Length: 529
Image: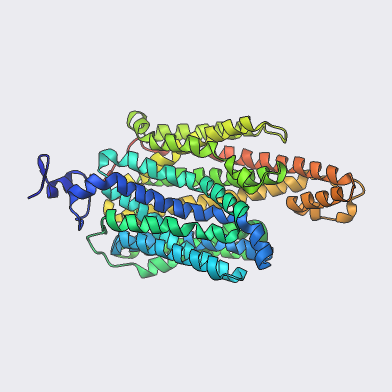
């Protein structure tokens, strides 16, 4: 019998809290655990990159494919909608049939759709379809990455490992902006898709060699009815959130689909309570660690994506940076986030999850409040320091909250637990962009002043900040100085809207800090023991 110290392999597996019997022996898995984490992190970054990389390529897509605003919106939304709507189901599939297989299949789907788009897409519909397939692949990948990390690492190292995973999840979006900006600035929009292929090939090859096969050994039957209802419910809710700003929050379409999502969610809850083998055991939510971890993550991602959305516009349209220049200015955020997330386990061990997460959210609140003093002329050094502070706060929030969520559920449900964790992030991010964008637009319209003599432009400068900037630039090119005044007024109105959006984000972060301090436990009760 193979020995590792004083334990047999079988005993080692039990002692380290690993809930599956792998094809490769436990000693090998334990020895490779950090390399496995590297593969999971690489796979995770691919998912997060694809959330945002295409944002900076939209102008090029518009010109090359003659895509209108609606089509451009759906190029972005198809990925987010399918990804967020199917996360729970794909996590459950990974638990039932194998997380490694789900990971590999998802990566192949993303790579295949990316390559075909880069080679053959000649219409916006082609790109929309490809993005939907990529979203489905990503929904297989993301829960698998976290669930594999949870079951490979022993309890005493799990906090550190999940912290690194959370750090990669947090920095994926800023890195995606940089990668997308570089690709568009130096090549064309197709390069945004080609970037996926070599990274995925590396992840696939390393995964085949290093990653063990794991699944729920109890082999519970699937819950197809629950799966269908969850996809319909989450899809409806996400559609209403994503489309609300453009269609109108009070439109019959958004109100109707939003109401449908709420009704379907209630039906899902009722069904999961009755079915013998639920896809998502609702008893998980009785655990304050699980529930408050999800709340903290959702609200943190609200703040993060709301802020990134407004700042990308701020850097490009107000400060007139290129896409790559704008993306590079986000670097202080991941530079703060990565070390904070990776080392948060030590702070949790000393002070408890609730105190660390509440501190992180408080730092985010302070950073946001400082940002409300920003003007058009504010030096970037101040912005960089604010971004770094926000990164520290987000790192101290994301990693401990994620660890708490995963430690509060049994390991045989790691896939669906991870998917629930990821869904909360996705809903938070979608809400951040939708509400943050709506607040910005409302305050921009309220504060925008069109110079006398330009009344013939009608409502256009009020309705769209980019349109106001474009009209102002055109007037300046003709030698009309009213164009300069129009640009300055639009910039001032935008900054007013941006500050209002940041105030909302600061309030949400502060409320989250209070809730976490009050209701989040210091430690997980379950912890896979």
